[in-house]
View 1 (spheres, rainbow, N blue to C red):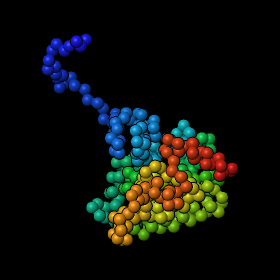
View 2: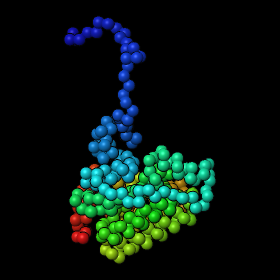
View 3: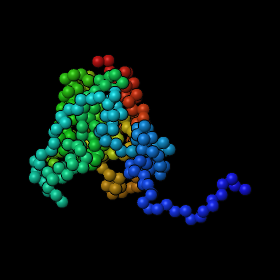
View 4: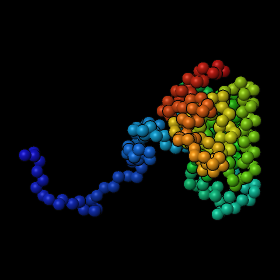
Length: 282
């Protein structure tokens, strides 16, 4: 016989007495479906405790993960896009910029700053996919170039965290020019002997992949990140063949020699510090 017997059947809680769980309290992994508390998810650097799926995060989260005590100085924080081509699709480009700024709290698709990472100086440029798909416009190229200038002037290693759909169509040729600008700055870092580390996250595609994302002294990536230039459908139609399984995943790209290593986000700060200890004595 059970030690507990329900005497009253059909117990119901009045609607006004029911309590709803606050929004954002739980996180459901889009890969394996595991549900975990958002606090645990954050403590695990926004990765799944079950399958290690790496959730897309923005510049603020990376700065919090990397910089000691989240102390850093942001560079060119107020820079925002103009409208050189007077571009209009479903809405005018300036209106799209203002709407995206209001929605994300960002001024453009990249933030740059410098601070300490395990006691070592580091300049970091980190892209935000939430700002028009992390697309590369004039501001993105200019902020990265200026951050590299700061790195050159103060002889500090540079980390680029890429997360982008590619060039920004609203700026056309102006956007494509940023590929050359940033590549030229990387050449100056190389000439000065200052390390340039490129971290490719999910997704890194288009003109970003074809320029600064693949030009690191060390090219590294997070697990499972999508890395490529053109999309799988375009490539399939061009070559007329089915693509290999896992095509354009970080693991596939590493296997074919385009990445030096893949690093779990939870280990990123320590791995970067160890790498700098080996390659930089400045």
